[in-house]
Image (cartoon, rainbow, N blue to C red; front, top):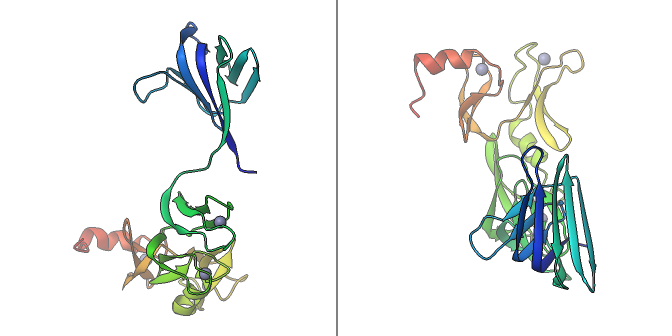
Length: 260
Ligand SMILES: [Zn+2]
Ligand SMILES: [Zn+2]
Ligand SMILES: [Zn+2]
Ligand SMILES: [Zn+2]
């Protein structure tokens, strides 16, 4: 069952009791929106701003019968209540996150729109969700040849084009092909190997557990070699050493600059 929002409308008295100040009362023909995250908004006829609102309240209760409706949201010591004068209108509607359209669900029983919201691609029909790795951008001009989902571009040493479904294309496998055993551990000289922890690729020393040196792989492409011997990565926020705590990097940053 998809989450639902409740939309109520009618001649209402709205009472907001804040933590400190005096209570505020409004009356008018308003539209009230109660979201699944217990956010309550009361709108009158003009402007984008609600007459009264409470965001992600601790509790939200809706009572409706033939005589009208009453809705109360409580958050700490603040209360927002709306009571209708007369029956009013009440409707429950399915609601989802809204995001940038990135294609259509390839499931033949579904076919609904896929949208990107934050770090996920979500199907508005079946609710399937695909978590994206940091820094990934979803292409709207190409789909996976195997499953029909959108492909993403993501950089971990090199730029990869992969299916957004990890079961189809493993980012760790792609990183392994380019970065495995390519650099030496700065502490013991053994190889840095590509490993995975909770779905995220990282470079860890081959000498583990004797040597516990490990680095997460930055979201960027390989640039020059750092004075410390490790690679530097060109990322969205600038060039950085694989070792986020590297001090040799800062030395050159002030001495020569990198021209960007
Ligand atoms: Zn779907
Ligand atoms: Zn695929
Ligand atoms: Zn080591
Ligand atoms: Zn360095």
